[in-house]
Image (cartoon, rainbow over all chains, first blue to last red; front, top):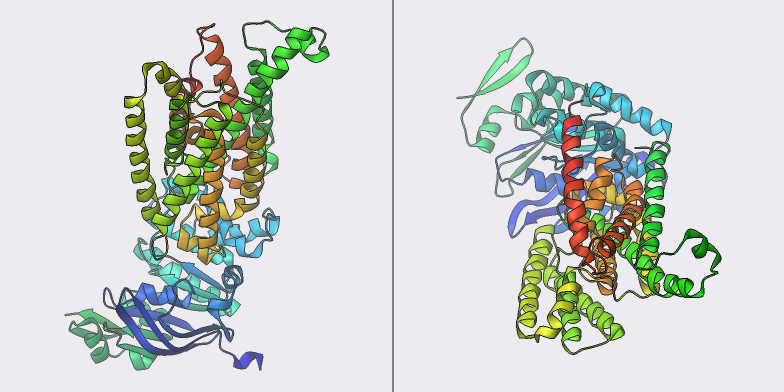
Length: 259
Length: 325
């Protein structure tokens, strides 16, 4: 019975904000170990959908279930033990060291006033090593570059150890090397721990390379979701982005170039 | 910063508080020796100590501690390191109440009641107006509070303009922060104990809220409930402080910042540290305000700013130096 219940399920979900509809009657089933990308036009509602899946934004209709339980009825702390979110912008305004910031990811697992244990610190150190920030652990986050802040935020998410990772443009601010490196690490992390990934991406080629499922938002609540092989087709992508594409076959798989 | 590494800092803060209390008790026109203080052989000196200086010293410490905690809470509520306890107009409401009472020649009890009622009215007004029909976001809360504070400011000017000259000095002293009405701060101490305990209990969530509301929610904080509670807590602390000592500026802004610069960024340490530091700072300022141009007294709020500005700038300067170290 337990393994019949999907990790996350949306049942006839409508997503909207201020009268704009981003999704209508969306039915998704997210299973453990899957890696989803959310692709789509500007303003199509990718971030709002991601926040809705995280239980941070109420759907205008329908039901979102985490392990079969409506997410709106769960305490935030319980959700935080299962779902972790990387936000599009990091809004640090108060000074704190990178280590202190990453340790905040352990909050859902601590009881009340409990101080972080040596185990928590070990987990945070490992997370920092995963994103190549181990040397900057004692630096003030306010002095970090955009890319370093982004990696610190990803380390916080890894330290949280959720079963479902929702990432809003994880490659933001990252250089070429770290873009590939971080996505690879996230993918490996999920394969090893059985965690699930859902990430908003802008690069179709990165999506095709790292994800097995895709959700395409082409505006006006038109959504295609399914296997990457079915969804990531040149014609579908052209329609979704309203821009002509060329598919190029390479030794490492297919790539799309904007025409 | 871990609890053990904060030990030296808290030792310094404890010593500062003790020194502040001692200085404040020791300052005044009558010289009272430590021996007299402890043994109580000299009846007049004992009376001065217990009936004049102790209430004043205790009020100074409790007020400073309340303001420092309220400042730390406002800063995280508004997610703005520049916020102070007065930013949302609580003190403006209190001031209008207090000035009205002073204008009518009211006594201490009425003055304090009027100030407290003014603070509560302002708190409720901001709460109702900022909440509107939907969720209350930070910008809306800040704008409502700031505009309301400006409105109170206009009323204060109006009251000053129409008051007879004989009452003006008392009013100005109150507006600048004045401890000369001090009585034993029973209610203030209760509010301090309540806010300090509640704030320390909430500290882990405050750490997260400082990093953004959505982020805090995604890490398990019930953000709406926390923000409402924070607003009420900070307003209550500010109201209690303003009621017993008028508008004492700067403590609520600098005490939390001095602690952050000293490395106590974790609210579990910041809240108790701010209480100790705020209390100590106001005791120092009060002792100075009574001795600087004795026998005349200065409004203590002037001293807090005169002391606080250079101290803060110095710390800021040093922190910038050390940033790349």
